[in-house]
View 1 (cartoon, rainbow, N blue to C red):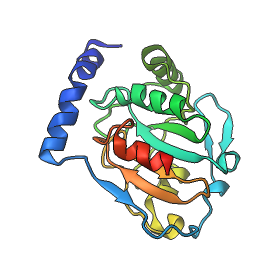
View 2: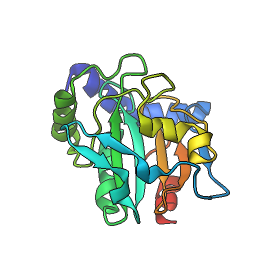
View 3: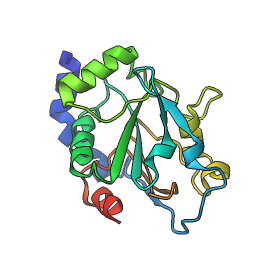
Length: 196
């Protein structure tokens, strides 16, 4: 971990407090009319950072949380919270991290460096996708294209507002929630959504 990363980890609680106080990066969106999406979530797959393909179809019957991540962000300590959530609910929840360099170049490492950073510093064992684009762009990762276009997911147009935006898909492949970066993975609102 670099000196900058250590500083960011130390000030993370302050970042959460300040953003909540200012009402920044705290948005929560909920799908109040959960119906099957026009395009199936289970037709999607990702390329993992180890080169292996991972089909979303294998997660039928489980909730899936998809999070855009970065190693050099004030929210990077959320890796530890995501791992804690993953361990507590691994019988019914899958978490997939999507390292991306879309916000102020906060993910500069290679896939191998990112994987090592996550494992060594935060004990991450949940799957990580290959580094990709998560914001709307011609190169946008197909999973994030599905998450951010209502013609595909049925209701949501919200793209990630910053690193560590979180999307929750239920056991039937329906996108049910979007959580902004300042909503901690171990917050009551996320635990409640996972428990529903």
